[in-house]
Structure formats: structure tokens, C-alpha cells
Length: 163
Image 1 (cartoon, rainbow, N blue to C red):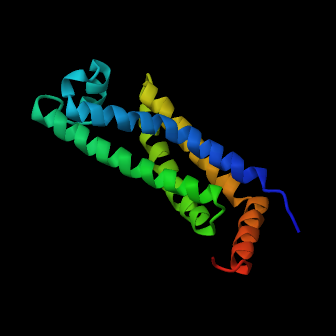
Image 2 (cartoon, rainbow, N blue to C red):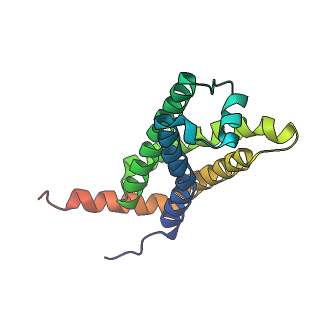
């Protein structure tokens, strides 16, 4: 019995990948900035300073190192979840609920202040897009058709002999 794969799973994967791309780019930029703080655009230094990070001398290296570590860890976890979703692993689906739920909550709360406070920055709009996309991933993965797709994949793996 062959069954079509749920399009909702692929939509969730595409949405997760789309929202992960800017953070992957930011990770690469922060690694570069940690290695050479002088190469950092002034706008990025101002945004870091507005968050309370020191952006002068060795302090800039430390701030960019922490930021690169945080962005790298979250991006790696999300990429591993996406790989699990592609393989239709139930554990990846469950992890996606937790990870994208946390990302949605954090991004949503972080952007509310800047949106209500006046002129939002480009980072604020990325936060809004992240929160909306994260919520979209959760909703798509929670749909019954997606759940059935994952359950059928798990049942198929259990029936096949390990080899």
C-alpha cells in the first residue's frame, strides 16, 4: 500500500528552512566579526550596544563569540530537526514542537517592545517573521494529516527488517 506524503510536512520543512536561513547568515557574520571585530558594520555594533553588549576592543570579541555560539547552537539544532522531519522521524516532530515553540515565544516577546516602542529596526521585523514562521511550523506539524504521515513512516520502519 503506497500513500502520498503529506504536503503539510513539506510546507513545515520549507517554512523552517526559510526562517533558518537568515540566522545561518547571521551566524557566519558573527563568526567573522569575532575573528575580526574591525570588519563589523557600524549598524551591527550599534544594535549590539543597544542590547547592553560592550563593543570596544576585546569586549567586542567576547560579545561576538557569545552571539556566534548561541546562534550556531540554535541553528544546528534546527537543522538537525529539519533533517529528522525530512526522514519523517516522530522524535524530530516532537522536538520541533518544543524548539519552535521556544523560538516563537522568545522571538515574539523580544520584538513586542521594539514594535510598541516606536520605530522598529530590521531586526524587529526578522523577529516578527521568526515568531510567525515558528507558529506556522507548529501548526503545520500539529495537523492530523501530518501526524498520520509520521505514524505511517514509523510503522513502516518497524515492519522492515533491520539491515
